[in-house]
Image 1: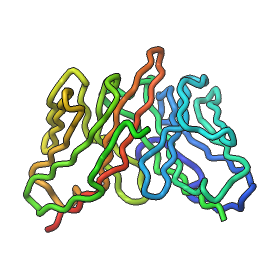
Image 2: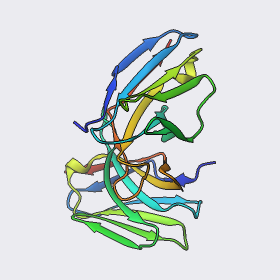
Image 3: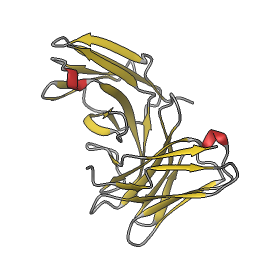
Image 4: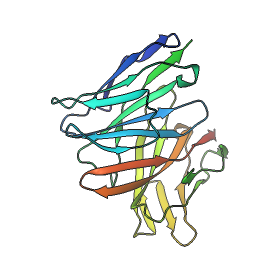
Length: 115
Length: 115
C-alpha cells in the first residue's frame, strides 16, 4: 500500500457521459498529480495541484478538469467521454511540489473503459 | 514532442546477469532523472534517481548513470533476479520554482529475467 488511494479501481461508462475519479494523497503530502496511461503509451502528465492551487498543466483536454479540496484530496472530472478516453488514470502525490530525489508516490490507478 | 524516450520496448536477460535499460532525453532543463518500476495492476513505484549535476548514483543492485553530453541515462541491475521482471519507466523532472513540478515519463521497457 503506497498510501495514495484512488477510487474507483474500475469504471465502465458510455460515450458522452461524465465521470469523477477521486484521489487521496499520502498523509502529509501537499501536492497531487494526475497522469493518463493509454494502451502502449507512457504516462502522460495531465495536471498538478499544490495545497489547493493549480500549479502545472500538461496535455489535459478541455473536457477534463480537476480540483484539490481543503482536505487535500483531489478529483479528476472527465466529461463528454469518447472511446479514446479509455485508459488507466493514475494519481500521485509528493510532500512538496518537487520531483527531485524521491519522485512521486503513485496510487494503483483507476481503469476507465468507455463503451 | 516526446522529451523522454525509451527505444527498447522489451529486454530479456538471464538470472544473475546484468540488465541495462536505456533512456534518452532532449530537454537540458531537467533537474533530476528517475527510474520507476511497475508491476501489472499496480501503480509505478520509485526505484532510484540522479541529480542532473551527478553522473552516477548507486543503491544496492541498482546503479543509474547519466551522460549529459549525450543526453542519455541508463539503469544497471546487477545481478538480475526473476523478481525484477516488470516494466521500467524512465522519468525526468522539470521544476519551475514555487512548488511547481512535473515528471515526464518515457514509454517504458518490459524487462523479463529468465530463471
